[in-house]
Image (tube, rainbow, N blue to C red):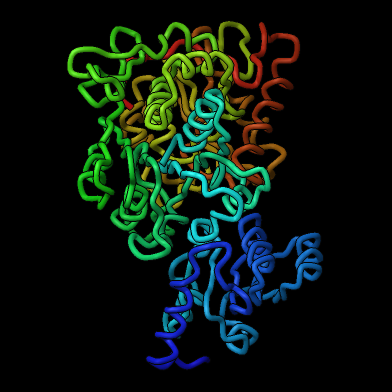
Length: 524
């Protein structure tokens, strides 16, 4: 086990790292250990080798293609289960460690780094420090328990529609390091940040982000198993507001986000901009008699508002569900902070479609709608989905990630025709239904075979659903117990529905067609 750095060595190492705030700084020979070789870890290793650093990658699982490329670019790879500290790491003696988002804070290698005085960054801090390789774009940050990806896509769409070079990146699937190294450069990066990524971000110092605008969309119990507590999870989310320059956008229906803005250290002149489904006040975005409005970015905001779009215009495109309307308002606030006119936002929404597996209409048959919201991977997301529909046959379950779904069940039993429970954490859900709806038809899919889970669930749903019902896949849980990811879970639901209905379907939507009538005044 390596000894702690001496005071002199630690000071010298810290001084060198503090100086690394540009692509053009002296990164040559810096010894960096990279944890993980997924999409993020590979982007980190590729960036650092291009900068001239000495890179050692540690990974329990390795894609062979990435391993071969690492050898070509000059990084070294250690395949190790990482349940302990590899000898190769201690011998390497890193000056810096960059952890991929999936590594828990109490991981043995991260604890070793803390004990020995090795600095730990995430990929976001590295990307911020080297953002000037081409053009130092402004950053707009988006986080929250739910709605991040949709809001990022909307905001980037609005910015691009106004002629700006805008890139959605981060936790959305495109590493920020790819964006900052793109030879074409960008004006604005709209960065989706997970709580895992935010955990490693400093609030002050050379590695602290200074975003143009930022938003926490909502905060609900999630990833408690990773962060250790709800307070730690919320603290990570709150980091997104630190040092914001122009607009801190928050959810008026979620007091936690308002308090985060109040407590953040922001740059002078930054404004707090609220959004919600109710009537907006000055400096807010909201809904008035079915019209989405901006009362923040106009001189007469105390007496007037700017119309963005109507709920009636959104509904044919499947964008009128309450939680999607909230995403639109938040994204519009971010785009307006950057000067995008409301007319541009209106026109861009006419062409915008949700990604697959987000309140997606799969089919209609016999008056029954089949809806895929596999992306509802926690109770907060499932709550928003359930509120968008009337009588529901609910397919629920998976990995609950340490989150208690009891309140979710209790809040929605009155709208349920039946519940079909899938996944490994069935017992907690079955017990919740027993407490709050003992007379509700309840079915368990006990098969462990991935190939049969959705066909069994769909067959059970088809047996109990009646005309006017919605069969809703909104699992309120992660998918990795029985599926590759939430998209795999959603695809298998589609396949099972189509196989079950055959020629009975009255019609299927496009990947992002309407999910049916929304309840725009619902609290979500």
